[in-house]
Image 1 (tube, rainbow, N blue to C red):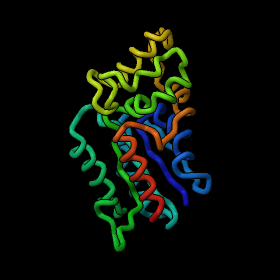
Image 2 (cartoon, rainbow, N blue to C red):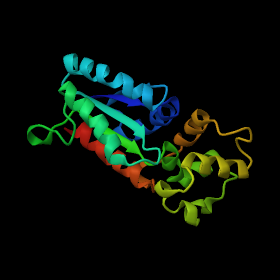
Image 3 (cartoon, rainbow, N blue to C red):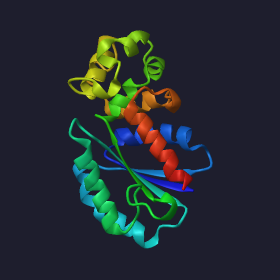
Length: 204
C-alpha cells in the first residue's frame, strides 16, 4: 500500500513526515506534496486528481488535508469532495461496493497548530520551559476551540516561555513538535477524526 498526501504548506509536510509512520506503520510507503497555501492546492487539485484517475495503481490511496481556518467545515469539505468525484475517484461518501474508497478529504480544525496543542506532552518535550499544566488551563482544554487562532495562541505561549522570540517559525515548530507526538494520546477531536479516517482509508 502507498499513500499520496496533498497538503497546503510545508509546515504540514514537516509534521506529517513524522506522524504518518506512527499512524500507518512501517509497511505503508507515502509521499507528501506541499503547496503555496490553500488556494494553490485548490487550483492544482482538479488536474492532479484527473491525472491520478488515469493511472493510479489499485494499492494506492490519496489523502488531502487542509486547514479549516475558522470557517464552516462542510462547504470546504464539499469543495474537495466535488473535485474528487469529478475525476471519477471515490471518497468515503461516494464509496463503491463494500464502502471501498480511494481518497480521504480531511480538515484540521481550526489549523494544524490545534493538533500541536492537543499533545502538550510533545510540546513540553520540544520546549521544556513550557508549563505541563497547559492542557488543563481553560483556554486549551479543547484544542479545536481555542479563541483568537491556534497559531497565535501557540506563538504566545512559546514566546512567554522564551522560545521563538522573533516570531513563530511554522515549519521549524512543526518539525520540533511532531517528532515527539503520540497520535493515540492527542486531545484534538479533529486530529482523532483525521487518524481514524486515515486508518479506514488504508484498510480498504
